[in-house]
Image (cartoon, helix red, strand yellow):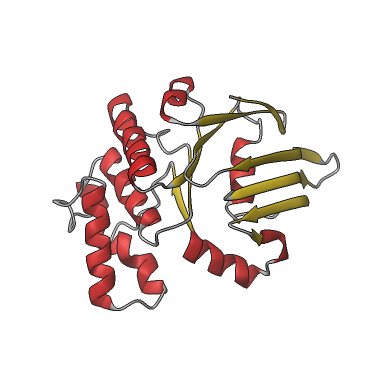
Length: 223
C-alpha cells in the first residue's frame, strides 16, 4: 500500500468555518492510476493538496510509503516533496527563459546531482514523453500540449513514488487532452507509476483504474 488516509479533515477558519474535507478514509496501492472526481467545490483539489504536502490537514493521518507525513516539520515536508513526489498543474508552471531541457533538469540541480548525469536523465525523460526533438525549445515555441508534456517530464525526472496531477488537461483542446491522458496511462503501465489525478471530465474515467468520487468534502463512492 503506497497511501493510507485516515479520518482526514480540513477546516478553513473564519466567522463561519468551512469544512472542506470531512473524515476522509481510503487507501491506494502502488502502481494504481486514481482519479479524484466530483462537482466544483467537492474537495478534489483540497484533498490532492493534503496528499501532496502542499497544505496541512486540520486533523487525521496521511501515510505515504510507510512514512507518517503528519510528523514532518516544514523543512522535512519540503525535502520529501522534492525527493519523493511529482506535481503537474493545469498552468504548466514553466519559466519563460528556460528551455525544455533546463526546465526538466532543474529539480535534479537542486538535488546536487552531477551535471552530466542530470542532463542525460532530463534528456531521456523528454524522449519518454515524445519531446526528444524539442530539448532546446523555449515555452513560447511549444504548443500547450507540448508545454504540459515538459511539465510531466519535470515531475517524473526525480523518479517520484507518486505523481499528482491537478486538472492537467483543463487548459488544453480535446486532441491535446487525449495525448496527455494516453501518456499518463502509458507511464502508469510501463513505469508502474502511481498517479493521482483531479479531473472534472467524465470521459477521463476510461483512462484510470479507479475513481474516488467526492461530494461536499466527503467520499461519496469509489468505482
